[in-house]
Amino acid sequence: MSVRDISFDRPLPDNLDAERLVLGAIMSNESAFLQAGGTLTADDFSIEKHKRIFLRMGEIHERGEKIDRITLANELMKHGQLQSVDGLSYLVSLDDGLPQVHNLESYVAIIKEKALLRRIIAVSQDTINRCLNLEEDPKQILGATEDAFMKLGDLGAKNPLASPAQIVEEYDGGINAFLDVNKRIKGISTGFTRFDEMTGGLREGELFILAARPAMGKTALALNIAHHVATNKTNPKAVAVFSLEMSKESLLTRLICSAGRVDQQKFRAGYLNSDERRTLQEALYHLVESPLYIDDSAGTNLMEVHSKLRKLQAEHDLGLVVIDYLQLMQGRGRFENRVQEISSLSRGMKLMSKDLRVPFLVLSQLSRAPETRTGDHRPMLSDLRESGSIEQDADMVAFIFREEVYRPDKESLKGTAELILAKQRNGPTGTVKLAFLNRYTLFANAELNRQDDDIPIE
Image (tube, rainbow, N blue to C red; front, side, top):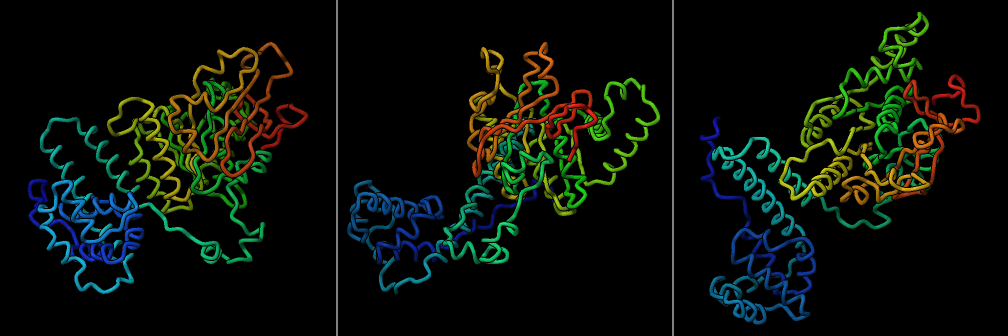
């Protein structure tokens, strides 16, 4: 069917009986407004007179007055709207002879459902009209549509309140499993022992921001974690890496060189001995067999990421998503400034991680502030570049800091690194000492002996 064949002649979805019943129930029993008002807005009603009636009901309730035919008619009259809702006779018809309503929530749910359908149609129709006008770039239209649909998804994402009894009842294994530490859901191990002890690993539905100044090793650390998750001997899980900076060939080169502990410069120059070639072949074999997937598409947006992840999740046990890096991703809507755009992206990633129930490891740049500070160059939360809501949306924020970058003349700092856990919503903050093997672009658990071949990779 062509676009011009699409017809909107059918009436928009609504349920006027449910709307009248809810409005009548509020006038019959004022406490009903507390049930309906916490869920519905005036715009959820399909016709203008119902919108106006509900809006005025809310104003009466906010003043602490009783909602009935007389007070409502008076409020509408003050705004010159009584005749536009068909007068007092229509208000009387809403609750005249109406029995006590016991399942008001069901009627409220019907109204919300029809309202959401109308909003979906409105967004779709607006998109079609903009496409037919031929006045905008297609990518701009797609971005605005994506943003509109994501906002619609947000409207229906409210979960009801749950009592402790309900939470335990719905918990897999019941109360015994809930109280058993060994049976509680644990996060995915990163391979860095101390970090896993502090955080419990990367947990489903959480957004983990890993930030650093350029050349500190953001991509290296993210790939180390991705490799550990995908090649874990006891419980390997699929990992999706979206790289907006490096090609998939470059990332694969990094992965096999760090896994095989082969100097990347020697590999690129082609000066490898037989042992190094054999080691690289073994590392590549393990990666080929692992559920690791890399996407280096330019200009990737949230909708494309979501679509690809849903397909991957349907085929594999998706355990981790890596995005390298936040500031290179483009928002697909209209934004007043870059801060709003980045804030929209971070919020979208948080919602996506919750929807897919998968941890997101998102890399981010820092401002130049750490370099301008005298003495201690360690980054802080305020250094997040174009931060907006990054700090607010993230469940965890960690910084990579290598003091040897600022003091290259000090031999004792060579090969040392810090992973600074600056924010953790559900746990402690602190610093994890790591070792950094520069020629392999490899981070590892720190040991007293920092000789390259003595540092284990878990």
